Amino acid sequence: MAELSKDILGRKMDPFTFAVERSKVKEFLIAIGETNPIYHDVSAAKAAGYTDTPIPPTFQTAFTFWGYGDKFWSDLEAFGIDTKRLLHMKEEYTYLAPIYPGMTITCNVEVVDVKVGKMNMVTFKNTFSDGKGKVFIEAEQAIVIRPEGM
Picture 1 (cartoon, one colour):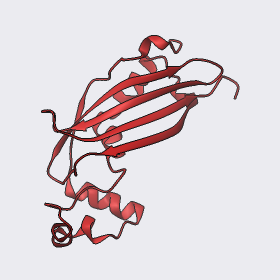
Picture 2 (cartoon, rainbow, N blue to C red; picture 1 turned 180 degrees about the horizontal axis):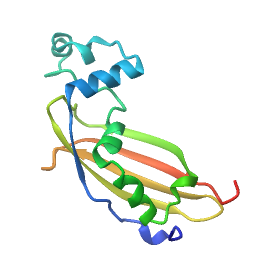
Picture 3 (cartoon, one colour; picture 1 turned 60 degrees about the vertical axis):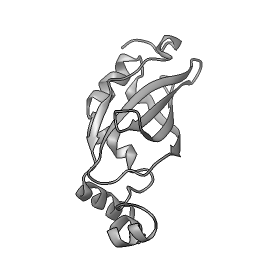
């Protein structure tokens, strides 16, 4: 495996798409114990100003694992990231517009920061859009790569 280098700054992964299925959202809501009616009942969502039941916060994290699949891990390794030593550091989301069941979302992932040292750190920016320019969510996710032997 290649060593992590600051040269990956600005590198992008292949974009991927994810079809937002109502049943997958419902499974996610059950898994996290979310009971707010706006996520379960179209009438409650419309009364709150939505056009349908919106996805709950953090559901878009599932897009990467379901939409990008195993290629996500091989792409990280191609960037010089040892995925066996990877630790999640943080995530920050900026919600710009609701995402609803039935939509197809395109995600673009770019490396926006790299720190190489005793503990290497990489920050990614994920942009979730309709693929035509309308952005719904921007996310920054940072990881730490533990040194060998730790």
